[in-house]
Image 1 (cartoon, rainbow, N blue to C red):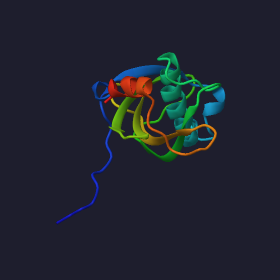
Image 2: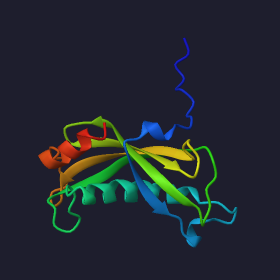
Image 3: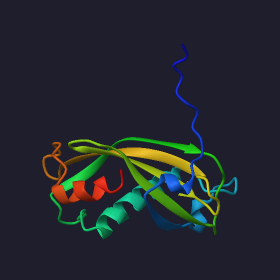
Image 4: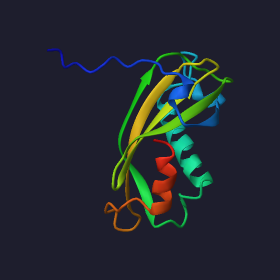
Length: 146
């Protein structure tokens, strides 16, 4: 019996619940003429946190609960480059008591992901850094992304 994980593959836009526009910058390109891999992780953070701020469930300046990234991964399928406009599709794959697995698809002009990845936030008390239950308002918003 083969227990090898399935090979990562590009996904369609329909696999994601909400979308955020992302503007590429001149500095995103590397010497090979495409967006550098590390930039995608920044896009993941930007897309998810901006969405949560817009929904009124993340206060980065005065909130008592913050999300700490404990795991992240990205797979790449097609090249993107400045000045291309891109979109980040967001969904929630797993909603725990104090953690969330966000999955983000990065799209250029096509129907399939140019890259897709995930990260896991563990929500903690901002001062003690101890895990806390997801605040009810945050959980309600996250449930719409499952």
